[in-house]
Length: 296
Length: 242
Image (cartoon, rainbow over all chains, first blue to last red; front, side, top):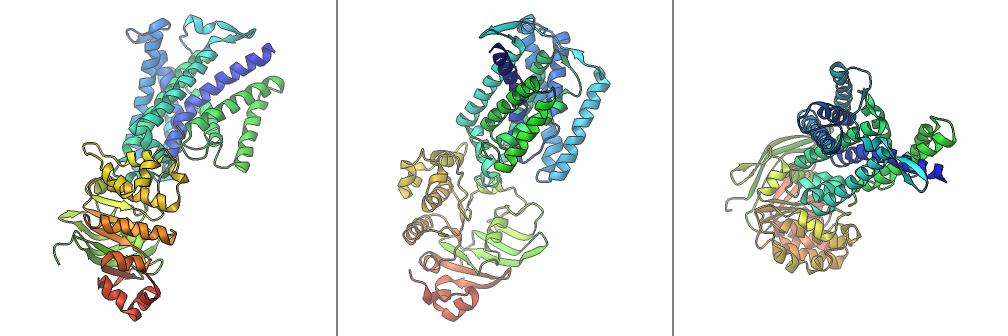
């Protein structure tokens, strides 16, 4: 029983990490039709900016309020880089899919190289608050606090995103744009502003994943974003392009499947099963669990 | 004729290698309904979409389109619409996952007061069905929503593409009634296949054939000429009843 609880909660922690990366990716693809392979870079920027801020930024630190400041700095940095990428590189290439893929793949490779050149290829120890290294007893299982932190963060982000999509003007524009971008324009709305906004939101969520992923794994490395991005893409496809709720369901399915199969089967078999799940969903429901509509 | 609200000169559109419009020129009167007619595939929808800047990316548009002194072709769609060019697309294109109220709210513009009173006076059903998802409305209700959305704001010209397509005869009459009332206050460039609706609404007609203008003039004159109507549209006006 303890093992099942532990596996469930650590699986949900992993799911939370995937959701934070996938939610922005999904909205960007759903609204702007951009397959953004540079999304992992935003995660890397968030992680490294948090790591840097904890040691260097006045008021920031590895613990307490200082850690919150460091994470906020990381999130802001990730969001800013995402906006710059959208404005400078993606905007001239809307509706030019092949060029977008080439540019975003190139950017992700260049980003990793830049992080390596600046801080080295080896993993860096991430500044972690003391309580995040401890465990909490849940139904008899000793669950790492870092995993619980990820779950709480993902739930808060999910709630905030749904509230944003449901209650704000830009949320309405994004939901409509996911359905029919052209018609949004034909109502007199400059949909490009919404593109920039979803990049900013996606970049912020990915950067938060980078910062909290650093707490979860204990280290940060240049390639971390890329490896998480693969599973985030799988989550987006399973959940349905443009659907935040679909991404949440899919992230939970992928995280739990990976964790349980890796534990009860062979290590690595969980990853294979996730790919199998992707194949099954693509065969039975190609539009994903929640289709193309962004539900609030 | 007084100054036209819209003038199209030598408009050519090429999409994916197909030369769909080949030097189309016509004018839209400042009042009433000007109808754009022609058999299927002659470029009626392409003309409206080119005017409002919705030619698919990669498509090539040449010529001149002016609304008053303003040249339209180089401007992005959202600016044209904000400038008073209302567009009701073929197949309605309501946002199926949003409610009726959300569809309307989307059309609101900052700094202007949306004309909900006018829209709900024309379409009381939209007021009653505010919380219903637009995707669950009937075709006629969706058409009313598509028109109502555009009428929330002031327009200098409305482009309306096949508003009666696929609708039941009773609903066709309702839509025609509404457009008749709308046209009292704003000029309309209408694409329509239903000649009974054309007879009821249109004052001027432009007939396209194979990407060119084949005939322009008084709409009622055209409909009276059965042989001409048959040769241009493939259907005799006498075969259609209002």
